[in-house]
Each structure stands twice: as structure tokens, then as C-alpha cells.
Length: 543
Image 1 (cartoon, rainbow, N blue to C red):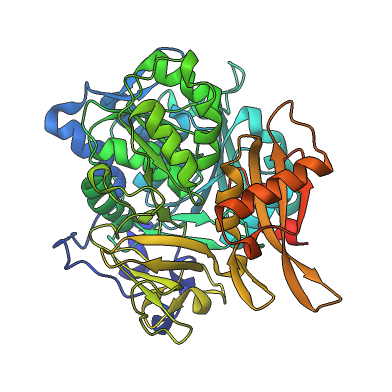
Image 2: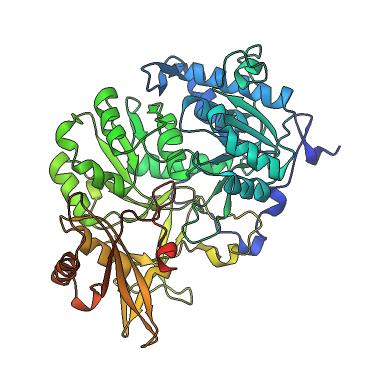
């Protein structure tokens, strides 16, 4: 066994690193803007957990339980260390192995995630609602051979494993007395663990995109990347305090949730409240009951919470972050009017790991995504990759300390060109450096010679009091061989879906934006197709 394939005497699995994109398709990484420096050897779990305990913060609250209990930093560290021993001693995990994690947001999922990194393996965290077919796709793509699973979610995993085969599974939160459970295996393990001596550029996680445009892509991120998003977005935009309590709706399998509900609070020595169910009502209840200060959720949740604010005491709330899709200005304005809080809008991606455009509270402009996050640089490019003048709509291009690294995927050459990452969004930048979202590049509608932004039409319609949700797509007109604007509308409760209501909404839209942008067709639906993380799946509406 060569030293190149050893980590502390353990053989290293190089499957993921062998399938990184070719050098010419890798993004250019920037560290100079903020003087970011990371050691060559780095285990991110040690930074978020061990470091805090070593500095005397072991008794500080780390994870607040919905039941009312608290896990201190010392308790989370000891639990993660015991799980890491199970991975190495009982499941024979090798550094570089991919470990699938399946559970709702909960303390054990967080501890398992840290344990995987401590063992030098790669965490593949999945969404709780995924079914066997989706799990099998991920297992095949990442060549997963080990899994840690909440016993309540085992059925779909078992079906996936039956079709895929060869996966060693350990379950937790099952019936007491199960000798094979993760808890039983942990019982006699030490609370101390020698973290794997991983390189800063060793792959720590594989995150799958949400599939809003089709087949999910597997994105790979280094141990160093996990710290970089904290040193940029968390430190320069979010600005958390050690006394903060975080909560939100995104699953930890979604990188928006991983950062917002685990990495950012632990980076600051703060605490997180991990809710298994975090719909708008549950979030408001949690803010009031536990004194939550910082919330991460999607625009649709803020819209839903607005009608319930009067029934809850949310005076503890200090910071609200929105991402996943564009935040309509009407929602931002109403939230600010009712709470006094300026929602921090932002754009991020699984490929970039987290938010790369978004401004701190004192620099927010309603309707704008914000300025580029310090440490990143962003431009608006034409189709040839050349910068365009401010005020011109073009393709958003970004560079920073993180970047797209697909796992053996031909779409890498689409996302990365000449070192720039192209998330696929149409934007314009103003003279003050603020970025204004126009549409996804594939959501631009060309109708009668006009370029129409679907999200712009959505923002106009959502301002109507009777519109609960809306999605706009282009529909092909076979007679004119062009497209026209079609809106799918979910009406507010008690509002009748009639032709007269459709006409009313169309006229309202014309009063808000240029009449040629108004929908020619409005179809009323009971719900819109969304991913588990709340992202709209427009491709399903187009088809």
C-alpha cells in the first residue's frame, strides 16, 4: 500500500477525486480579496466542533431540541466521535468512502454528518421525502456503500438498497433493544476520536442539485469550501452572534440548509434549532417558543407567514434570509412593514455551495438580490463571455473561493467557462453594483419579438390580494410559431376560479407592467409543482 493511498494507516478511496472535472474545466478560485488562508491539511469537523470545545466553549448550547432539551458543544462532539468510531471500527469505513445520510433535520443527523467528516469519508445527505428511485440514482452516481438512516425512513432506503445492492446500513431512532442500532453500537465507544488527517482539498460532501431543470447533478465540495462560505457570507453579510438561535425550513441535504442551519451557527459559536417539520406555522411557533433570532427559509414561506404574524410574538427575531428562488418585492415590502425586519435576499447554488450575491441589512435594496458577497466577484456577460455595460441584461458570471465541481458530468463544461461559473441566471447590474434578477436563462419568453421575464410577470401578479402563488412560463403558439405568456395561479382561500377572475388578474397585471408582458392565458390550479426544498419546477409546467 503506497503512502498516496494511506490516511493514518487506512487505505483511501479515491473514487470521487478521480472523477473531478478535468483541469481545463475547473473554476478559477479566488482567495486574495479577503486574504483568506487555509492550511494544506484541514478537517472541517474539527474546525466547527473540536475547536470550539478546545477554546472552552464545551458547555455552550449547540443544538436546541424541540422537546425543550439542549445538546451542548461537548455533547455534540462526543456523540459525533462515538459515531465516527462505529463508522471506522464496525462498518470499516475508509477515507474517501461515500456515506449516505437519511433523516429529517435533527441532532442525530447533525452528529452523523460531522462523524462522516471526522472519519475522512464523504457525506451524501439526502432529502427525507426522497423515494427509492431517487435514492438509488444518488447511490449509483456516488457509488455509495454505507448509509446511516433514521429508522422511521428505512423502508424507502431498503427498497433502494434491494435494487442497488451492497450497502451496509446502520439505523438510529428505532426501537429500544435493537443490538444492531447505531445507538447500541455507540454505547461502548469512546467520546474521543482522532480525526482523519484530511487535505484541505479533500472532498467532504457530495450535494445533489434539486432537479428543477431535470436530472440532478452531483456537486463536490472540499473541506476548505465549508469554511470559505462562513468566512465570506456568514462573516460579512449574515454577521451572526454567539447568542443567536438559528431555525429554518431547508433540509440539511440542501446546501442552503447545511450552511444556514448548521455551519453558520457553529461558526459563530451560536445554537441551532433543528425542526423535523418546519412549515410556516411551525416556524412561527418555534420563533415565539424558543426565542429564535435568525431564520432561513424560502420566499413562499415568508408569504404564508405574513397572514399569521398577528397571532405570534416574534420580537426575538433579528435576521431573516431568503434564497432558493427570487424574493418578490411585494413580499419584502409587506414583511418589512409588519416586522421592521429587512429580509436578506440572496442567490446561491448547490454548485457554489451557498450564497454569493447578497447584501447585509444596512445595504439592502428592496427587489434587488444585493451586491456581490465579499470574497466573490460577479459580472454580467454576453453570450460570448464578455462583460456588458451596467443596466444591460446578460448572463450572471461569478468567481470566488468556491466553485462548481460536478462528479463526472458533461454539464461541467456548460456551468464553467474560462474559470467563470455560470449559474444560468439572467441578471442586470446597476451603477451602484446591485444585481437585479431578471429570470433563469431558460425562463426568458420570446413573444412577438419581445423578451419577457417570467419572474417579472410573477412579481406583478403576486401583488394582487387574491393570488397565493403564481408561476409563469412560455406556451408555444403552433399557428404563429412563437410563444406567449401563460400563468398558473393558486388563488387565496375562498376565492372562486372563474373566467371573470382571470380577466381581472390579467388587467391588474397590465396596470403593473407593460401590457405586452401580461399573460394571454391564466390557468387556475390547486398547487404548483415544487421540489422538497420549495423550488418551483417550471419545466413540469412547460411540458
